[in-house]
Amino acid sequence: MSSQPETLNNETVNAVEITDVSKIFNPGRHNEVKALEGIDLRIGQGDFVTLIGPSGCGKSTLLRLVASLIDASEGTVTVNGKAADRARLDRDYSMVFQRAGLFDWRNVARNIELPLELMGWKAAERRRRSAEMLELVKLSEFARHHPAELSGGMQQRVAIARAMSFDPKLLLMDEPFGALDEMTREHMQNELLRIWSETRITVVFVTHSIPEAVFLSTKIVVMSPRPGRIAAVIDNDLGARSETTRDDPAFFTNVTAVRNALRGDH
Amino acid sequence: MSAAMSAARTLLSSWLPPTVAAVAILGSWEILLALLRPDGFVLPPPTEIASAVAENFDAIVTAITVTGFIVLTGLLAGVMVGVAFALLVTAFRAANETLTPLAVAVNAVPIIALAPIFNAWFGILSPRSNQAVVVVLVFFPVFINTARGLARVSPSQVELMESYGAGKWRIMREVRIPNAMPFFFTALKLATSLAVIAAIVAEYFGGRQDALGNLITTSAGLTRYNDAWAAVLAGSLLGIGLYVLAVALERLAMPWYFTARRSS
Image 1: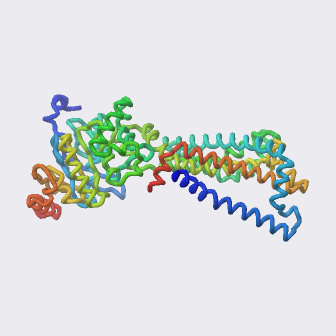
Image 2: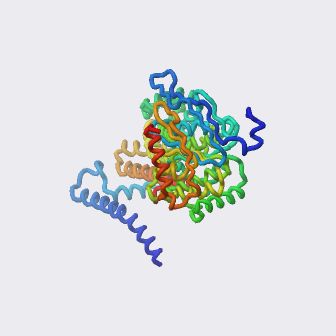
Image 3: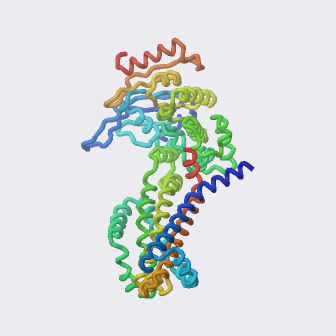
């Protein structure tokens, strides 16, 4: 809101700007925890950025700060040039969690339509959009199924379709494939990259997995714990991905680079 | 053809065991009593209870209607108050801090013991006192279970709604209330049998003279134990009927819940 002129031209405004942010949980109490300290990060439009680090490095906390589900103790977070809270209310972004979090009481199509209902879309337009989204995640024949009838991978695809349904500019994903088996996980990574290249949406993706980070992203933010800090930002330019990318020497070079950064020797 | 056969087989496999069990129990009850010949008022055989039902059919139908009305109205009122309390304590912290201790305190009272006092409030022959006992007894399990269902939602579903900019009431409607449905229906099924017990025991102390509780106490007082057993049977049927009604409502209200259970 403070930077009106810039928001008029989205291409010039960063998708996410995090400036000197720290987060302290339970300040002043015996269980006070400094989760994040001195975080500075710029994420450009159309980037695919992964946040990687060991448990307790604050990567999920950082994602929630961007989503304005929690507030920063210090510093500022802007999304598309707006305060994070404003961006949340404007539905500039959408979230996907580790657990698909589908509503058992809605069928697949109506799960996808949930954000559209909240935004007051008309029923016919919701139907049309959920059908499009089901096509995007290749689940058209499951529109009337209930979530419990789907496998974990299919549920997560529905969650992605739900997240994309209202054309958000930014997708925030918190270990979305963490609960899936390895085969499904690689399949989902391919699907996500296909969707990303078709829509050019900006993605911020939290993960534990080094190969996942290297396969997916254009930029890898390596974090270290206690308190959570950014240890390194690695440009990960592997070009267009395919199944052979996973066997590419450049892929392994970057896996090693991330691993070294995680160990703290860089 | 094969679908019809498999449907028939399903029906058979779900009805056959309880039917066989019922026939076996009633049969051995009848035979044992015929062999041992204890005094009739200890336990009459099923055939005598059945003929007592036939003899007193009109009185029993009236009693079921009268008590059934008390049970149903008391149940409805108790459920409504319980659900209202649950919604209030979930939505407002202040309500939680005042209403929850109050509800716990009310529940700690031996409610059946209030029946004679309620008679003094509402009049010894008024069904109001019986209804009041039912309401108070039904209220608590409905309140506690529903409140638990409203509170125990998946944190990521709430975060998801917040990420869409949804407010407290929208989250209540879209997440908390559907999530509480299975909890509510568990309580409702429990409450149906509680309500019948509460009404009949309350009727022992007062209320309409043609109600089930009164029929049981007067029959027993006149040593007409067969008639008393017939009235007890009528009370069981009332309880079973209400339970089946609650199960039917549950299936109607949340078909998704049974889809989920079937496939997992």
